[in-house]
Amino acid sequence: MDRGRPVGEVLLSVEGVSLAFGGVKALNGVSFDVYQHEVRAIIGPNGAGKSSMLNVLNGVYHPNQGTIRFRGEEFRDMDSHHAAKLGIARTFQNIALFKGMTVLDNVMTGRNLKIRCTFLEQALWLGRARREELEHRHAVEEIIDFLEIQHIRKTPVGRLPYGLQKRVELARALAAEPVMLLLDEPMAGMNLEEKQDMCRFILDVNDHYGTTIVLIEHDMGVVMDISDRVVVLDYGRKIADGTPTEVRGDQKVIDAYLGVAHA
Image 1 (cartoon, helix red, strand yellow):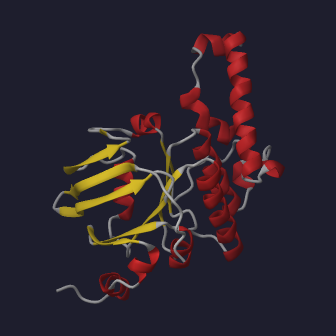
Image 2 (image 1 turned 90 degrees about the vertical axis):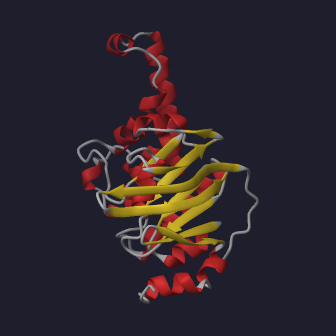
């Protein structure tokens, strides 16, 4: 079902992006845009180039060709740290949390870029460091409440079931107060109940914080339910782009997912 919500102006513009590893082209002239406040899905069969595109968007990979504009400004040779400073946060297909640390401490690490006091001030616990710590703690506690993980806030992440670990990773990404949030297969490995919870929280984040969401997801039911628009990749090329209804009925998309031979 198309969500049909009003969205803002173009936030991210990808124009003719190509990426190659040796002689293998992971992305080939891909163009699409993302509007403010929308949920934008990137889908495609295995090996289509979805994760490569996400890695380009947050500076892990640098495209060989093409341009990317975020908030109207073109960025070149951007790394992940720069992307985070611009307001781009990400979760990963394979959970990247500190398993021995508590939920609260993991989410607090998402505030690192917001720290303004010096190392010396932190070490001596001076006034500004104390005030800043309280401000960050308050922001993190609000996110923990929002994602309904108060009951596990002092639990080491390694003891949690997979679905809750995914929610903690979402909380840590939100702690950075991103303008755009990249989600790499947020439903992977989840049971039906966990998927329903994650869908609800993604939409809540989008509505409550106004965060623009770009996600990769294999569950087509999820994609069709929560996305405003969908871009489809196959063998590194864009083969479709539109609303969930438009994409679902596109013959090129049907052929790609059914494994029809390419001419």
